[in-house]
Image 1 (cartoon, rainbow, N blue to C red):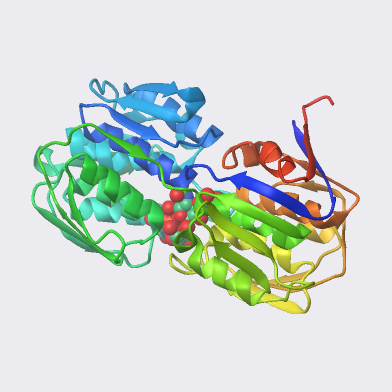
Image 2 (cartoon, protein in one colour; image 1 turned 60 degrees about the vertical axis):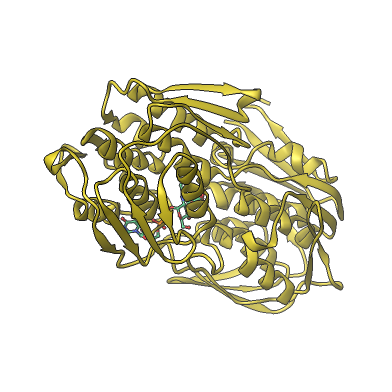
Length: 424
Ligand code: EPU
């Protein structure tokens, strides 16, 4: 298995271009299933999760063409000849469940494997299923699969209130409701920029949607959708991750394409920690205000709150901050697996339930560490930027799921980072 080696190398300087959002692209791609005409996505990130979604769509009969080295994806769902999303693909990536809503809306039936748990939590899909049931889906859970049918052949508009905010369930319901008969109102829906991006793309395809950014989405179902071309929104989690690089290592870095409104609560926290964040006409410029970073407390919440997907990276910053910080994880029950790895680098962290108390130390020390999930793996790389000596991160396939060209991007601003292939 490949490894990434990082050596603390002092201040960083230069630009990092930010890619299109993985999590937006993964919900935009299944939108192709809603139309017989082609959907083209530009600004797509080149990531293994996107290749997994490509394989899933192809297994259903979609044609997916990747242009400009994967930056442009053209998808055509003229001939959907298979309505079963197989366990072998779904188990690799939970976002596969997002084909359920659109297949059901388009053809009135679908069979999709249940994803099962994952490293950061149990992550059930009950809310996806309840929202679809409210729209008239008949569901039968057997052999590890959801067998879904639209009663009467077509989903019906409905009012549904999510008991808790779920990004994926909102996406699945939205993808289904655009072709349902009548009006659907989704209350307590997620407001993440990826939801707004999905709604904007669907509107370009002819859908009638209002309120995607408000927590109540109203959808007037239409009979069919047409083709469209849509640029994937900037990846706010990649943006936040690289904003932390100069905060941790020192120096000044400009994140090209970054917009503050994508990372509002996170940027506010950085400023509280004595990091300066400036919007320029090219993106966001980040540097420390003074010397040492100040410890701040963090609570993860749905958008517009502090994102769970930046909690691990923020913890890496807090490891060398002045004072003690408490990070509270409220979205996933098992998302502190990076803590013991950071402790192997000399961090002082005490995890108790959904809280982690981090007391800043003067210096981290390089060590061999193991990535446990996508965001955990990048937090170890960030910590390595500030550590004395060499940090070797193994199991970097996690990183390939969500960070495009991480070595190129960080070495471009002066970091000492390289990837060793298996056997090196
Ligand atoms: N939940 C349920 N039932 C459901 C759905 C969710 O109980 O049917 C719970 C989850 O277990 C969790 C909470 O609701 O405790 C929120 O989960 P949500 O559904 O919002 O998460 P998701 O859609 O599965 C997406 C991102 C995650 C990100 C979360 C939260 C994608 C492909 N994934 O997951 O991204 O952490 O929203 O913002 O969009 C990542 O990129 O590293 C990642 C894990």
